Structures are given as C-alpha cells and as structure tokens.
Image 1 (tube, rainbow, N blue to C red):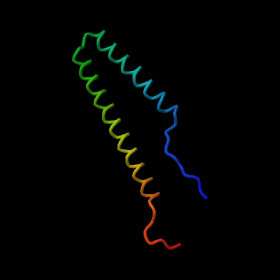
Image 2 (image 1 turned 180 degrees about the vertical axis):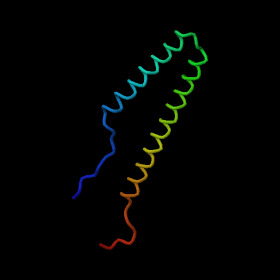
Image 3 (image 1 turned 90 degrees about the vertical axis):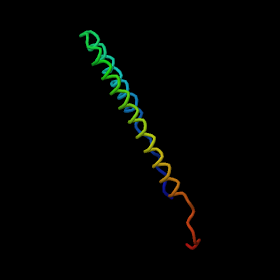
Image 4 (image 1 turned 135 degrees about the vertical axis):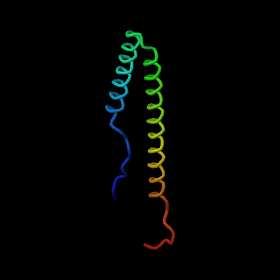
Length: 82
C-alpha cells in the first residue's frame, strides 16, 4: 500500500520570503519618503498591494486545484469489478 502524499510548502520558504519582502518594502518606502517623492511611495505601495493580492489569489487557486485533484483520486470508481 502506498502512502498518500500531502502538499505542503517548505515552512522556511513561507517564513523567509515574506519577511524579506516586507523588509524590502519598508526600505523602499523609507527611501522614497526621504527623497521627497510621495508619488513614488503611493505607486510602489499600490503595486505591492496588487502583487500581494494576486499572489494570494493564485495560492488559493492552486489549493483549490489540489483539493479537487485529491477528491477525484479518492472518489470510488463506478462499476465495482476488480
């Protein structure tokens, strides 16, 4: 009997990447604010939020696809026979 595989991203990746992204984001905003470029800050914040929103949407889409595939694999087959 084969063991079932479960999808789970490595914990380190999902901890380190958002932390680095937030640090980069904070640094960029601080740089733009210090150079007196408020439009740059607004554009960057808007782009960052849009990219984050899209990444979250894609993450949920992938999760739904994985759940659907699992459901299809675990569904009993019609016809019985061995």
